[in-house]
Length: 266
Image (cartoon, rainbow, N blue to C red; front, top):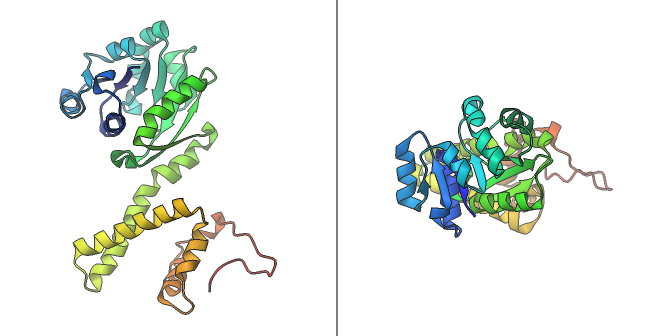
């Protein structure tokens, strides 16, 4: 099976590296980008096959990943449409904000089209991606999507109406998390740690805690309570965060126990 990428920017490159690292043959990955330097770099690193145009990719691939910027869709997609309709490969878009309806309006009806939203962690093989497909997308097409994007992290099928929420959570949260890590590191520097040491401590603490959350299956609040000793510094810090608005109560549903306690540690 040949997978084609039209566009070879950061996200496409991250996915391709994940695919090759996961066992895909580089020669079965076809790429085209207007920036030849990007194609050469991926060829040298991953052994991909370089094409001379997007239409060449569309004419050879079994699945075509549209990895160009959303603003050039109105130019690029109509050019690809005749070839895509003749061969009918699976079409996958990773363009932010482009709905299935918008993509189909540019390509024309009759193609299996899937919309995927990965996030920046694809660069280290830890992306959280969501996908949805149009009415022509069957289980075979979905399995191809999973095969490609599981090489770059986790992937789930999601109703398109929830994509804006997913984007805010998976797409924006890396920035929020990075600012949180930086704030921890700055606090460490303030009280005497070298910046490099503080940053390593903070980032490893977040990484380890995330893995603990994933592997334990426990609610994050329950795990946090395990760290909060009565009258200790951790609970004092938690309460300070909450007073500062870190915990947005409007979006938190904490079930009340029969004794009326909402499960918080004061």
